[in-house]
Length: 394
Image (cartoon, rainbow, N blue to C red; front, side, top):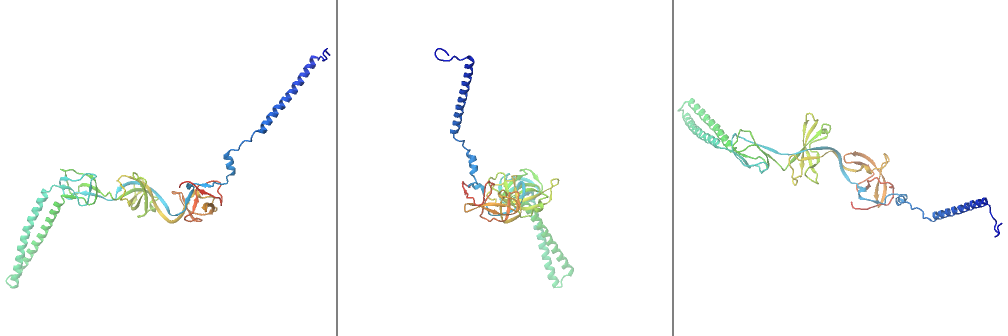
């Protein structure tokens, strides 16, 4: 003990006491820290579940549908289609040829100029042909005079024969002479008519209404009879010349309808019909030329050389109930769809018929009728009796 009443401690005792104190303090501090940490964790708010997860947990199916999710069922005309493409050509084309030979005096039209049937489009020089008409006329007049003389001689011989004042042989000669001169008059009249026609044909006229497509001659040129002068096309009627494979051409007949889109004619499909089918395929291609004439296109400007593409309808079926194939659910024979009835989904089992792959529609032979609204989109979670509403613009 020291004099102040305190006991002296050995260094080793002090050292052991310090270690014990440190340990106690450490334990106490750790407990406190642990308590603080535990208290903080206990007081913290629980982490929120993401909204999308919570929504998925509560969602049993869509309650809202867009118009694009629905398909209005109606009776349709369905059939197979054959895709076609080709160029446009005027349906009526009239080559204008020279009926007589001669030197061209005037060409009155140019390419692209509209003309009407009967318009004079070209004139040939007429000097030689006019002379031929005058010569033929004069020759005919002389023959007519000879025939008139022969006819009078015949009448005289007949009078004498009645009076027994002439021989029968003289009467027969008079009759033969009259017949010969009459025949000569008829022949010369025909020659005159031909000469007049030739003169008239020096004025060349267009045979149809249309537009001058080509002009092959110029004034001053000499042409022979039958030479090409002009070509006039009827721009009110066009046809598309398309190629169809020999595999498909057997399905085609004259009169079948086609729907075509034409480059340069925007936002409109044009109707056409088969008018002709080539009797053989092109050598080396195995494709057959088919001609489609456009219908009801008086308000559309078309030109030869335009490109058209589309399809020919084959074996059409009328009054068919058809829906998009994507609207079907399940597998045969449990195929079904959902329709909207009084604001709720209704399970409807259907029977599937033919499929038209080009339009992605399938025929429904039972289970649906015109006017039904079918859910075409494969939305998850749909169920019979679910309340739905259609939102948005169609």
